[in-house]
Image 1 (cartoon, rainbow, N blue to C red):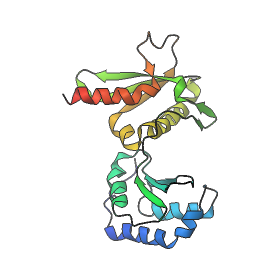
Image 2: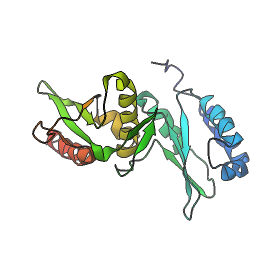
Image 3: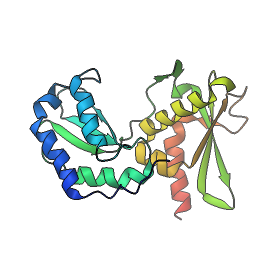
Image 4: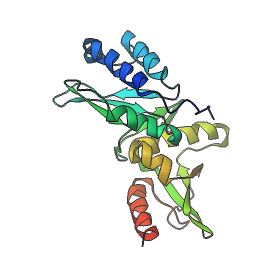
Length: 209
C-alpha cells in the first residue's frame, strides 16, 4: 500500500489545482477521451497532489458533464477527494463529483481479454457470527478459471465500484473472492449479483436495529 502521510495537503495546493483547471477550461471542454493530449496533462496535475488520484469525465450531452475525481477504491484517500470537491470553483457546463457515483448493474465490461457481465454473476454473503459487521462476498463468475483468478478479481472490483459507487464498494464490502458458477446457484445459497444493492440495504437495516 502506498504511503498516505501526504494525504492532508495544504489547501493552497488544492486551490492551485482548481485555479489551473479554470484557466484551461477550453481544453477541458474539448476533451473527449484519453487520446486527447490534455488528458495526460490533467492527470499529471491531479497526481501531483497525490499519486493515488485519478479522474473520469462523462460524455458531452444536453446536461452538464461530470468531472469525477476517484481514488480507485482507496478509502484512505476518500477524505482528500471529498475535500477537493468541496472547494471546487464554478466550471460552467461541468459538475465536480467526489468518487464514482453508483450506476447500478445494467452494464458489462471488458477487462484483460475477459468479458464480464453482472447478469451472469452470483454472490454468496460471507458473514462471521463473531464479527457481523464484516462482510465478505464470494462471487461466482461465468467462465471463471484459476489461471486468470487475479484478472477476474480485479475486473469484479471495477464492476462493484461502478455499480455500487466507489464509497459503498469500499466501505460496505470488506473482502471479495471469485469462484466458478455452481450447477445450481440458488441451491448453493447464491443470489444474482444485480440484487447486491438491495441486499446491502437490507443488511444495513438489520445492523442498525
